[in-house]
Length: 496
Image (cartoon, rainbow, N blue to C red; front, side, top):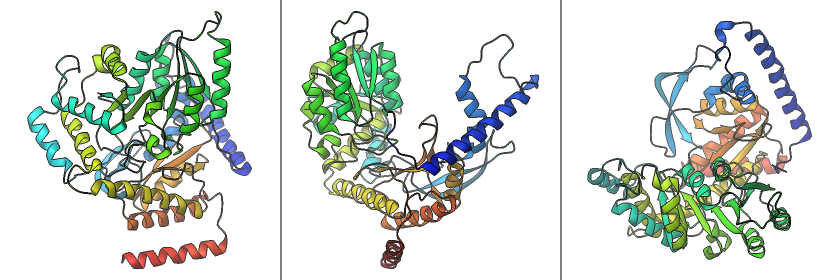
């Protein structure tokens, strides 16, 4: 089973009907388009470069609502952002900027702790590092790309996550996609959660190892897969696997769910399988001191063999890291393409992470880090609770700053996005191929920089738009609804 969401029967029926209608009319347009020689993008005698279904989806579905995606912004991704206005003269196939901006409440960026905007501690130090080191090292880590800042960050990250050593990469996606092929190859087995990130999928495929998946966040099915894989051995020869790596995420970015890490660790220990933990969305965002899913769920980091994370979410920078034993990190620095050939992480970006970590650890001489961690937790739990009370179908778990609101129907994707935008709320809508075709959603990401007033405004707009586009699949009871409206009015009075 690839996905654990249960679609209401009537919603599933109307969603299938809507996509069926779009496919029928899309193929009819393609049929008539085939008579227009000038409209053919593939030269005669050549095979199409684009895959058939994805290209059809782009032409006949995506382009119709392209204005809802990839909206350029003209400011830092703070609690409020300036979104560039666009227009189209060809039904959204081509979009042009008007030169104007629209100030919106930002519910889409991964700026969990609010470090992506100007910070009183981080920003001056980043500017100073820019003057001293320049924007880029113009070299890979093994040539002339390692600065004293890179060494300092690696030591700081290792200490922060509770591992003996760490290495940093210039890109979060490349951290996964270049590390997995370095760790395992032919004769090895990767067992991956069915909803793991695309970077993990790319790395697993590039490794040349055997890949199998287990049901999303289901330790019992993981145990079944492991037991069968060990009993059967490698295909054809039935020799034992050279190594087995189980790959999971701390917080699943499209579901907002926390990994059932304690149970998965127990299974992996039982069958002597390595654990690769991707903490892209959990490091810095959850746990009492921001140390991620292990701290939140009480898992000893010594039980995790490979810890991966990125600096693009909670730390307001770019790049990623791998943390593990000293032997592992020494090995990766010798064989990982992301370390050997890619340009090193920009020195100002490195300094941003160092400064953000110092704030989180309280080494800036204040308690702002602890306040940020408390605020993102409070904001996330409050907002999730209010969305559920108003009748929205919200995925994810308590404490997670990622909360997807299910839309399902393709017509509701642009309707929800455009109506929120009109009311000065910037939301991210997600559809195929990032999610299964029937499971489109709006993904809300909260930040410690959001105030209670910001959240109340967002809830008011989402409730209004939710009624308009009919995404409240679980209507509230009248008494609860009245009490909730009275509570919101009282909160606004307090703020004013």
